[in-house]
Image (cartoon, rainbow, N blue to C red; front, side, top):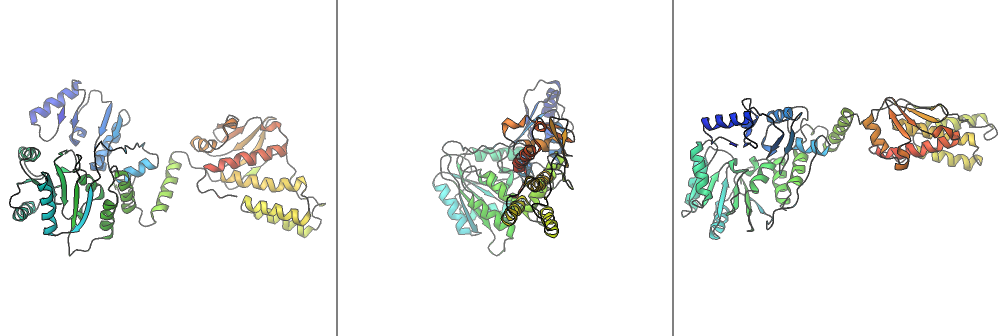
Length: 468
């Protein structure tokens, strides 16, 4: 079935009834399909094409269906909010980067408004037997624009189309142009999607600074749908100073001309406009105050926390293994020097610093005895374990070692991925703790060395981990 504005009231009623009874297997339609009057017998799959043209309210209705319906959204240029939701893992994304056979990149030209430029661009297209889209940002004044083009090129056949026309008139105009009975279609963004007319290979966009980046990309995609070289002319007023955002949009469109560049353009759009409010209705913005990179980092942290992937912060890590960690009097006899050595170890902020202290002791006092070496290693283990969110390390019975932690299972799985595969089965997660099986049967020194090694590998899961 097909449900759109060109259907009569009786046709719509019949289609809705057949949907309700399940007679229709597939229905293609506009946003009307999300209305309250539409009742599906058993909806299993929803495909949303041109997702960037839907507002947040429509998307919320789609989201309400997602609990029991599979949803696939398609777009050449996702809005910043949608793109970041995909990049951050909230939504899954696949890229189709292979263009249709024989397609050629569209040559994109930026130019101040100039009647001579417009006349030349249109004449070149008409001379090779093609047709032209001439796009304006507003319905107001569209008739005057058509009149100006008639004066420029008297021989051209001109049609006008916009969304405020009656359905029958609009349909007739589009069929006229599609059949080649008009040379130039002066129109609004009504042509932005859904049109495939191979003879149209030049598009001229007036006041292009008024359009969004995704709109301009979609409009440019209306031409070049055959093997013929297509041209897109983006015009802006001669006397008007463009805003920085508008300048960036137009530069980006001129920069990304290769086929399938919608993803790169959407990423640039996200950088220009911001990623929006993921829990509200704004689909762009919200990041100018703190900058793009910091905003992304903060947002990623918030997602991980919501998903239980955040590594918890603990005040300190207590190590209760059966170790003798101290500085013997036979190694450093002077009490003041010994206290200074203890303070040095306690104030170390990284494992790199601890390695430096170890080297310094060896150089100053000679070979380090096991108790003093264990002291440095215990502090090293505390630093590593604290960064991973473990609050206590202690024996459990005679065979296992227990790592107490407030972390949730999704966060543990991220850490576990960095452990060598042959060791992963030895780590068993349960709420509030991770059990290291079989480690307790080893000597305490070996337990210490293994924990430093294994937990050190887990640090690879941490963002921006310092090499310590």
